[in-house]
Image 1: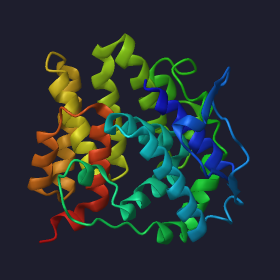
Image 2 (image 1 turned 135 degrees about the vertical axis):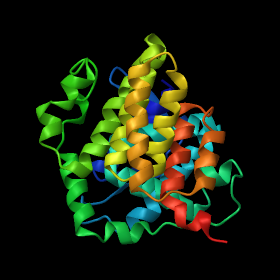
Image 3 (image 1 turned 90 degrees about the horizontal axis):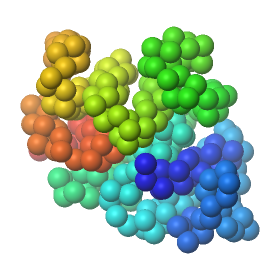
Length: 284
């Protein structure tokens, strides 16, 4: 997995502890035995979690992320940065990253798929007491225990206490954390198992009503597992449920199918953008 993947874990961990590095750039990151660390802790913004999740927090966290994005520069590396940040930071990281659309930064705009000015009301999301409760509860989950070493088989994870004791909404983020960590291992050591990761991500997205993420992940799983009838059958079953229960744009589905060769993290970013900005994208 890309090194920026682990820098994003640092960014998410700091944010969840109420810390935002002002000068958050690659040249201000060092490596210790425990992983990436900041070289300079003198220039920080501190806020109280969750009371300090306000407009000032959004402004400063967005500026911090944009500084890192500018220093990384390459879209492939930025997509890994995004993946690690959201998988570790959960709901709050997801809201903050979507807020970057107000800075003109989405994969859809970067790839010039659309020239529309896409907007996302992150402040409204943080005004929701439901979301604040979710953010607090995410902080209570032992995230470092979610890995293949602890749960070497997806079935072990699926029936684990940590997953079963998590709300249905947060299960989506927890599933993403586990399965993307699985991807990081399978991509290097067992690529033939990668379609299983895609299938589980797609099924989790379907349960969470992220219909384009579900469609994309399941379609990609089928395209990569033509010799595995069991995976094809399971994915097709969920896709049929999706077809009969969700209204979806044929143009957006075609856009997804045309971009299935994107690298995994970029593809997932594209799908998340389409789910987030569906209404704006379909406006004439």
